Length: 202
Image (cartoon, rainbow, N blue to C red; front, side, top):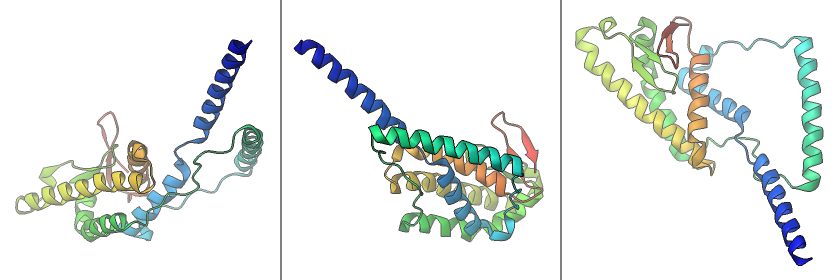
């Protein structure tokens, strides 16, 4: 009899652990908002494209989905409390502010090279020289340094945001979110590189 009780308790603990794991998640929507705030600070608010308004049908569908999700979440929380749920991404640490300021300081110099097609955005959240011939010979070392410095700051930024929020394991997710948002917020005429390696003009 004791053996059956022990086995039952073990199975119950496994179910509880699985439920808790479900509630520890990467807050993608909050990460997108945080990325947009940082990108707006670096590039300027006027460089963000307007977001399309949702149609009534899509709004209705989303509302229905939200009701269902809320109901399921409520039912689950009766069994297991939400573990480590986060509604926001903290981007206020001194290190994050310093990195943002550093990138903002060189954004004006990089802008001309984005516009000429000399450099572009990559699918892993970095900047790459796309066409060195679009840069005057005298400026090529300068561009290489600007790109290298910006990439160093970007790598540090993704790592710092993950660490500042207590989840170093989120670094890849933060990077992926920023990669998408850099491209989404880029100016018309700038280039971005797909995961397949093809350059596209926005």
